[in-house]
Image (tube, rainbow, N blue to C red):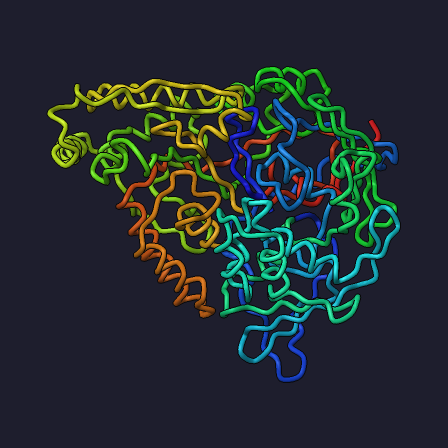
Length: 581
C-alpha cells in the first residue's frame, strides 16, 4: 500500500501502507492449480512475515446499522483513481472499493479473489492463465477479463506517469513502454506499444499474463489495487472518482465524498465475497494527531493509530490502555538525500550525515520508544531482512567521512558549505524528528540546515523537483517482497525514487534477483543489493515501525495485517462489525 509513501498521514502515528487480512480471506483459499503440463505458480509472498494480532473484539449481537468511524488524517486522499493512487490514505479507501484477481490473506499468502483459483503456469514460467468467477461491479455491469487487460495497460501508460508503472517491468513488452516515459511519443506510438503488452483476454472469463522473463514477485503484482479490474467507460468519464460516479469491484461502494471533511462508504450489493457487517464506514478528514486523539476519547472515532509520543500516556490510562492493540508493520522511516545536486551527490558526505545521527536517542525521545532503530530498509520478519548491516552512529567516523567529502567537493571547511535545505510535510508530526536531526548535524559535524515545512500537496512536487537537499520520507510495503523495498524505492528511474539515486551495480543485482525464481538464490542476491545500498547511503534509515491502535470496545471482527494502511483491519473491512451497545 503502498504506495505508497506515508508522508501524507496526519500524524507520526505508525501505520502501514499498501496493498490483506481478516478472520477469513474474502474468497475461497485454494491450492494453486497446476493444470496439464503446467508448473505451480512461483512468487507467492513468503509467510515469514511477522503477523499482526487478530482481535475478535467485543462479544454480543452485531448491530446491522453499525457504523465504523475512522480518521483518514488531515487531508483528502490524493486520488481515488486506482491507477494513480500511491499514498496510504488513497489505498486505505481503495482496499474497500476494489478487489483484483488475487489478494493477500491474513498471513500475507497470495490467494484467489476474483480468480476462481490460482493461475496455471506454463512450463517455462512465462505464461500465467487465470479464470474469473461470475462477478458484477457496483453498477451491475459484469466484470470481464478485458477490464483487467485495460487496468494493466492503463497502469503502465506513459501518459499517466503513474507511481507504480515500473512494477509491471517483468511483463512482456513493458520495457518498450517504459522507454517512452519522458519522450514526446505520439498517442499512436504509445497505443501501439500498449497493444503489445503481455496481457490478453481470449474470452470474458480468461485473463492471460505473459512475462518477458520469470519473476519472483509477479503474483504480488497481480494482487495490487492498481491491477484490479477497471471499466474503461467509467474511469474515462467526467468526475469518475466522485461518489456519484465511482464504480466499485470490492465489498463497499462510495455513498458520498464531502471534500476535506468526510467520505462515506456503504456495502456493495453486488459483492461476491464475505458480506459486510457494517452499514457504513465514515472516514473523517481533517485535524492533527492531537485533535484525532481528542475525538477518539470523546467516542467519535472507533479505530485510530495512536501518535507515538502519546502512547505512554494512553497505555497508562486505565480506560484507554486496554483498548490498545500493538502490531508490527512493514514500514520504515528514512530521510533521502538529493543525488542530483549539492553536496549530497558525494557518497562520503552522505555517509557522514548518516553516521552522525544518534538513532537510539531519537527513537526514545522523538518516537516515544515506539519501533526499532533501522540501518537498512527491509524490516524484521520479512524475507530479505538482514541483522547488523548498515552505517552505525559513530561521530569520529562521520568526521573522517566529512573530511574526505570536503576534499572531493573542493570545499575548504564545513563553514563554507551552504545551509542544507531540509524539507518535510507539515500537519503530520514531522517537525520533531526533523529538528532532532538538524541538531545532531549541527552538534556533531558543524553542518547547518534550514527546516522547510510544507503542506503535503506542496511538498510532493517540490520534493520531486529537487527543491530540497534532504527530505523526510517513509515507505510501507505494497507487497511483502524485497523488490518493493529496493527496486521500487532506489532503482534507477523508478517513479518512487525521489532522491534520483542511481547505481548500476545495485540495479544489476536487483534485476537478477527479481528474475530468479529460486527463493534462496533470489534472497541472496537481494541481500547483496541491500548491503551495497546501505554503504552507498542514499538516505538515513532511521526506524522500523510498530503500530499502536486504539480500538473501541464495541468493535469486533478485526484481524489486522502488517500491511494495513491507516487503521487496523482496513484491508478486510467486510469482516468488521459493531456490537450492539
